[in-house]
Length: 164
Image 1: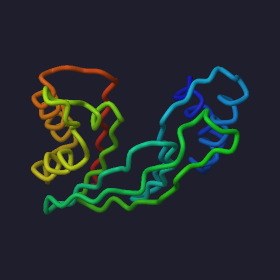
Image 2: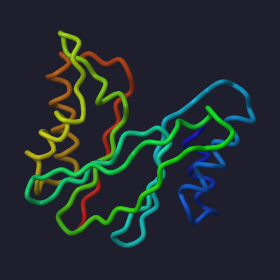
Image 3: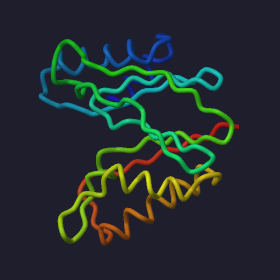
Image 4: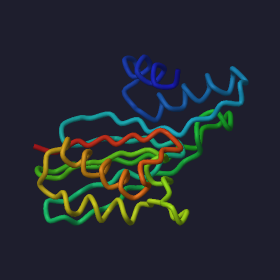
C-alpha cells in the first residue's frame, strides 16, 4: 500500500518529502495502527534527493573502497500526524555506488545473537569497490546469509545504483 502510494503521488509531486508526508497523512487517517519505515528518492542527473521516514542511512561506496553513510533517520510513516522525515541530497559521482537497505539486513543475527549491523555492511561494501550493482547486492546477500546461517526474521531488501 505504501509503495503504491509513493509511486502514484510521485507522478504529481516533484519532491520526495512531500510524497512521504502525504502517504503519512493517509496512513494516520486510516487509523490502522500500521507504521512503515520508508525511503523515497528522486533522481535528477547525478543528484538523488532522499526523504527518510525511520529508514537506515544510504551507503555511498567510493571507487577506492571507502564507504560514507548518509543521514537516514526520521520517524516511521503512520506514527504521527506530523511526519518527521530526514531529507538530504546526495551526488553519485562516476564509479560511486549508492546502496539502500532494509532493517531486515542490519538486524539479522548470528548464532550468538549479534546483529549484522552497518559496520559489517561497510566492510562488505568496501570489498566491492568498482563492481557492478548486481555484484554488490549479491555480495551483501551472500555475506548476510553466511553470517546468519541462512535464518531470516524480517524482509531483506538491498538496492544498488552506480554512477556512470
